[in-house]
Length: 201
Figure (cartoon, rainbow, N blue to C red):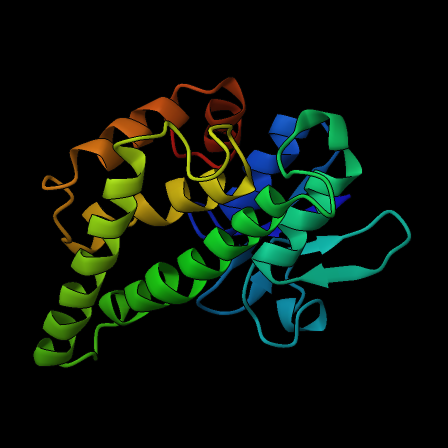
């Protein structure tokens, strides 16, 4: 399989999953500014929307959207327990967390990265993020991970998204349980490997 990624972007969650699962893969770095791949090709020939991640399967098919890729990878190695089995309610708790992170955290960070976002809108977005991170922090006060007390693909996604906070000047210091979670996830060998391969360590 081949993962199309940009360093530190949400594609890092898929990269972490590949490392956790010890699946064979290659990496293709994408320049998100000009939508090109390292060999000069237009990345939009892979994903017409021009964003990562995209996963090229062994049969040549392309899978896009981070949550779908994470579920696909986790289901390839069910014994790794990155997602509970189909039919178990905990599986859908992981899905609920992926949806929450994608819609309530990830998307609220997007305006903070944009240079042309009005200051008042950035303030409103930051206030929304504060409420959502307080919710996450409350959950992590009672469990080391988001769902079922075991590391899952949702934790990989939360780790990546929460690490954007310093980049955009969002203060995570009020969320001590989230900060402890970040350290816990960072200590995982698979996370270290993925970050080193992306030049983040």
